[in-house]
Amino acid sequence: MTNTRLGQASAAAVSLMLVAAGFIFLYAPTDALQGPVQRIFYLHVSSAIAAYGCFAVVLLGGVVYLWKENIAADRLARAAALVGVAFTSVTLVMGMIWAKPIWGTFWTWDARLTSTLVLWIIYAGYLMVRRLAEPGRQAARFAAVVGIFGFIDVPVVHFSVTWWRTQHPGPVVINDTLPAEMLVAFLITMACTLFLAGVMIAIRYRIEVLMDQAAEKTVPAPIVAPSEARGAR
Figure 1 (tube, rainbow, N blue to C red):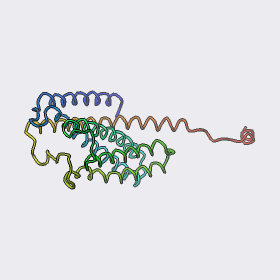
Figure 2 (cartoon, one colour):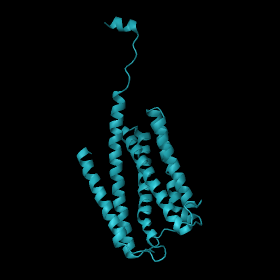
Figure 3 (tube, rainbow, N blue to C red):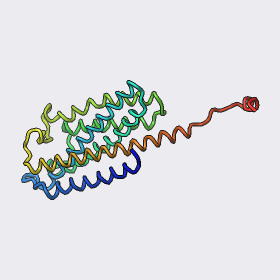
Figure 4 (cartoon, rainbow, N blue to C red):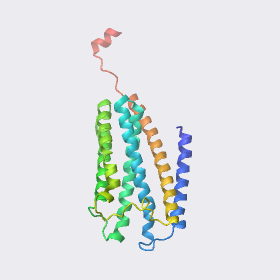
């Protein structure tokens, strides 16, 4: 994707998020029990779903790299991991803001919260591996394994509210407990957030390409002994 198209996609993503904000604050009704703070729900859950999608891309990229050693797949996994960690951070922070007035505390070691924190740690570790390890085939393969096995925690996070007794609300969308206006606002917010995540991955992928090209240009030339250099002349 060219820089022009990336710019257009970024502008579209910003516009769509503004549309989502309009549905959240102007269209969706105020929750009768929780009040205005419930509006966090729309972006909180959408960010979590976007993070799932990003980590699914990391999984796919890791599998393809281990299978074919395709550098483009590795770059895609790197890009998606960073965006996924960003959306997981948004999910955690917004959840804490929501929890304070409802539960009376920012954090509790609830199964959903704890498993989400573990997910953040796993993929933050993935990024740390990519940053600290010597670039090359070995680092890419090791990171691919981390990304693949790390995805195991995604279904754990998603189903934690049904597998264990938790303080966290159950799956209200699946259980069809949202009023029609709230459901519409949520679906639109989710679609806009997923589009934003896709654009962010595309931008980061472009950055990864440029970083790889810069690294290739700065590879030092092989050291030649003075005697060999004179002999060559």
